[in-house]
Length: 147
Ligand SMILES: [Zn+2]
Ligand SMILES: [Zn+2]
Image (cartoon, rainbow, N blue to C red):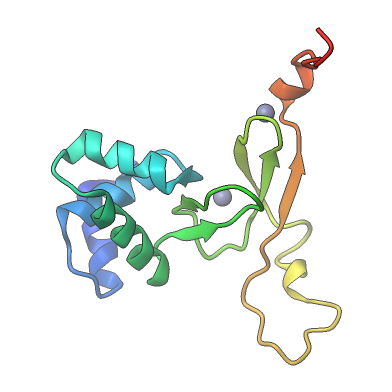
């Protein structure tokens, strides 16, 4: 469990001022990885109260820009945030309930960063999302529209 001091040090290491908002946002994201900005906004507000939605969104965006958080943007879903950064892990997302879990890179270190043809780009991230149904949704009986 990371402490308050660790998070403050993390901010400082990235050249960011330490503010109650940023600490609360970092903590909310690390408690609930893959949350949407909305979820994080609710969590932060429950914790420190006096904070505007805009301040939460601003904190999320600066923390993402500085590399403390990673933003994943699944198709037709709001962006989600996590604090597991820099290891190019991938995600499994349930189509039914939206549950998102981490999955390590396919095999070896980061084979998906080695594109068959990189077109001269310097690649530093491969965003892979595996879509499907989570174990719970697989077990759930199909909702039939016919009654
Ligand atoms: Zn599910
Ligand atoms: Zn993740």
